[in-house]
Image (spheres, one colour):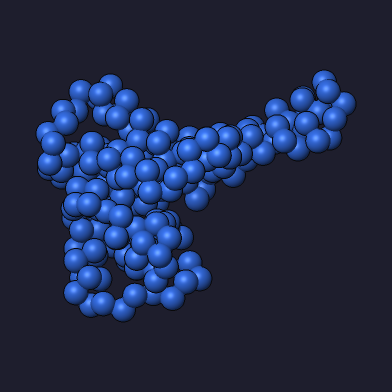
Amino acid sequence: MQQPVVENAQLSAYLNSLMKKIAKRYGVTDPPRVVVADTPFAQGMTDYSNVYISRGMLYAIGNEAQLVALLAHEFGHIRLHHDEEPASGDSDAVASVVGSITGSSIAERETYDVVAAQFEQKKETAADEFGAKTARDLGYNPYQFANLFETLWKQSGLGTIATIKALKDTHKTLKGRAESIKAYLKRQGFANTGN
């Protein structure tokens, strides 16, 4: 991440203690380091050796359950080896077929973008589920992770534009992610404990 970082020893120690707790759950003794990016935008990401949480995301997070689930989500990308999966999935093959059928290079390119985005969204969904389940396993209410995405969705004010844009984006809409997490938790039989 290219942003400057927030230098706060107490905050860093707290975030990294939560990451150690998450990693310990999976027998990992050398967890990624958590770094706070000094940006007002609500972001979280990993470069597979560090986890970056923005200052804006920390302001949006309402409780420790949400924070643990978000950190576990980023840890999940590492644990699920998302860096080792091809970025495009079956995009080339599907786009080629569409291009052949339609005779349109524009349709082929647009199809590639949509299929590639759907593949990346599957990785995000897997990491979301990993984060929610890990939060639950550590004693937190996993529904708080969905609540975080609902809060971010409301704060974004993007509505329909974001829904359309998500067709070609690597992430579902924030509202879609919240709904997906809730559906996953219900399928797993995880109770919403309210805290």
